[in-house]
Image (tube, rainbow, N blue to C red; front, side, top):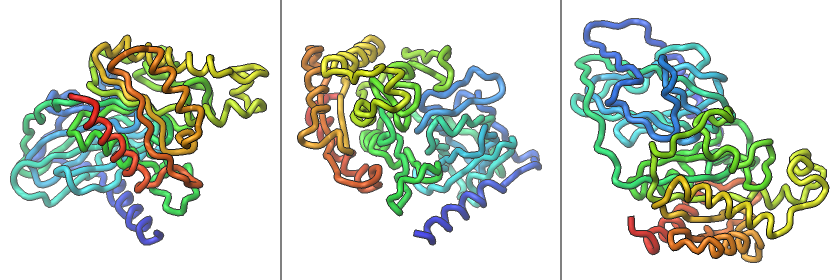
Length: 365
């Protein structure tokens, strides 16, 4: 394990110190606003200087020719991590600094077409990253963006969907953001399997009726900037074919903790009854259906204890789905995997297989 972590931090160090200050006539700078740069996820492009990345799984993609490529970036906290994916294959890790600078993403590339992707591993509570543009070096050429994907999928979830602590192989569930990797979550795996455009709205600790932190999903699901209650997402910009909801895991714990601050704020002195929870879930589904009139919506749980065979929380979801009488709303529960920590990479793969099989069997998209 220590050898793997040493290799990871070496990659981070190499990428982080690659400050490029010089330029020549063979270099091309492509600003963030260039149409050939492709953005996935809720990315704030209202800033005239840079694109702002907050949400897990947001990504930036571009096709190009050139020997090497850099990205001009600045991070709000210095605690964000990104996967750098070259030609849909090799992956290294980037941790941008709080100083605006160039980071070398790849070098010594062969002649011909290449692709680059910057994929946000970490959650939005680690702050925002600013992306100003790419610089291509040596025989540089910007190529047209890839054809749009035929399928679109979107996920609403908590730490399970975020890929929280997925690379903490000690099993201690470390909150250090270096261990979180949304790219290896069941959500991102499922999207790649179907070659679908991917969007992920998630936050560790969040629930439908109550969260470990002040925000609940019904208060956050429609935001462009997750920390700004006045920042609203334009749902017309992304109409998914499939929406997957994996929530209520945190509710299962917090509704039984009357001394918790959030319990008192949400419920006072009395825990919510079954009808309250079912209605809250139905209302969230109704909110999504209003924004996505044609989407297939999968209501799920997994893989932690809310998905146990005798869990009443699965029955809550079944009842909410039945009450809606919507032929495009489904219930599917991914396997319960007994563990002392958040889902591992292997657990996430098991969940992805379950979800993929369900989609293949039930949804024509």
